[in-house]
Amino acid sequence: MRVDALFHNGRFHTQDPDRPTASVLAVLAGRVVAAGDASLAEQFEPARRYDLQGRTAVPGFNDAHNHMLFHGINLDAVDLSSPPMRTVADICRAIAERAATTPAGEWVIGAGYDQNKLAEGRHPTAAELDAVAPGHRVWLKHTSGHMCTVNSLVLHDIRDTPVPDGGALVIGEDGRPNGLVQEQAQAMVRNLTYPMSVERMIAAIERANRQYLAEGVTSATEAGVGAGLVANSPLELRAWQEARRRGVLDVRINLLVAVEALHHLDHHHDDGEIFALDGGLHSGFGDEWLRIGGTKVFSDGSLIGRTAAMIDPFEGGGCNCGFFQTEPELLRRRITDAHRSGWQVCTHAIGDRAVATVLDIYEQCQRELPRPDTRHRIEHCGVIATGLLDKVKALGVIPVPQGRFISEIGDGMKAALGLHRTPDAYRQRSFLERGIPLPGSSDRPVVNGAPLLGMHDMVNQRTASGEPFVPEEAISVAAALRAYTAGSAYAAFEEDRKGALAPGMLADFVVLGEDLLAVDRDGIGEVPVLATVVGGEARFDRLGLGD
Image (cartoon, rainbow, N blue to C red):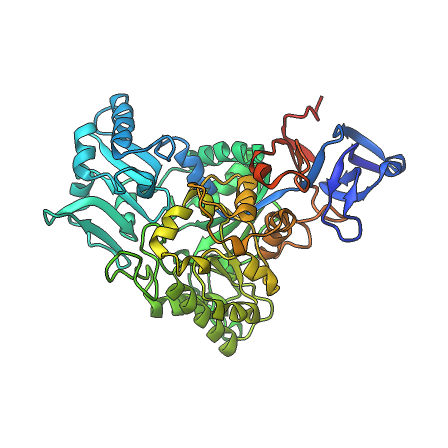
């Protein structure tokens, strides 16, 4: 039999229960034809033959919740992550350096800062930014994506703009805005540069694409496009399509369309209520490279920003219980309309009050408008009481937590929650023990999104300071790998073509420098990616497959 490619002399962990290991993989039209031992190679006549040199290969990594476009944009911004930033003064110096090479009047944008990791334990102020970047508009994006800090020029630009519901301009001791902008109020800042051009978005996608392939990512879900807080332009769908057409997007993408982009459409009375994109498009439209995967809905904020909707106040925060970005009754209407119209609903909910509210709405939707196998999701599902876990299972809801949060922002989450609530945060084992699917995801650029780093944290459960997070929620390396492959595929209704290397499945896999299932757990994040194969073609290659 003639095939396009034959990959041999490998050690494949296929995740196919019928054949869990293989040394040879045959590929035709981008899909696996067969997997087996060395004798299998004699059955095929390949157009191309690739020697894996005895290396280990696993199914391609699939990030179930990320912001690839934002990450590509942030690669052009001043890097304010910690390390290297240790103090507010470090941030100010970095902004001053960029301002010195930026023409007067233009924007100076930084990204990735976290006040929890700064010695002062606070955000920079507008006055501090004014001092180091006079004549520039300065915009510092918080790593969480749920707040930002701006200087006085930006505050002046937005002074007459009404603050949106679900957002806030923080007031300083002098009674004036101090530069910190929270949640939906960030739209006031974003709108000063909105919309972004299609060409700039394509360039950002191309930059991120290269990094994702180098980290073994073959699929990803883009968590919010087209409208709302996380949008860069109403034309984002076009930018993604054009990036794919030009050949600068080699990662398979599921797009979660922001609920704000949907609207009620005229329809025949036989068709029922339609809440969708023009033409009635909803979940599932597209192909194996680029498709609409669901609708993204925001309910609340973040833990480290202390804006997530909590039942009880944050630790040391007085009476601050966070807040809803979307008022609960509006949230109910949006989710119900999307459910009725056939969408997979993917709702951001981090605080325990937000998670409980979203579960109640999903339950009401299924009771009043039953649909089989909806796989509605709770993005992050950050804090959930034990008593609600069985409800998640009964409703078939898919939680989408981020293991990488444990290391990078775990200390900040523990400080916000206190020791008594931290065990309810970012569960993993609790889901698996109840038979609840567990995807793997990063929420990049909130944290470093390399999947192997995410798996490392899922297994080790240690914060950046070395403190344990929730050791009881630790899972095995094999379970973490399944999360980043089969788990993420299931969360996107793609388990029929992703998550395993078996006949009929997409030929997407990663070649590693060490056997991930045999390496010491402290070294998981250091396992090198040698090659990333998507559709049977090496899109990233340090192994010399193409030689």
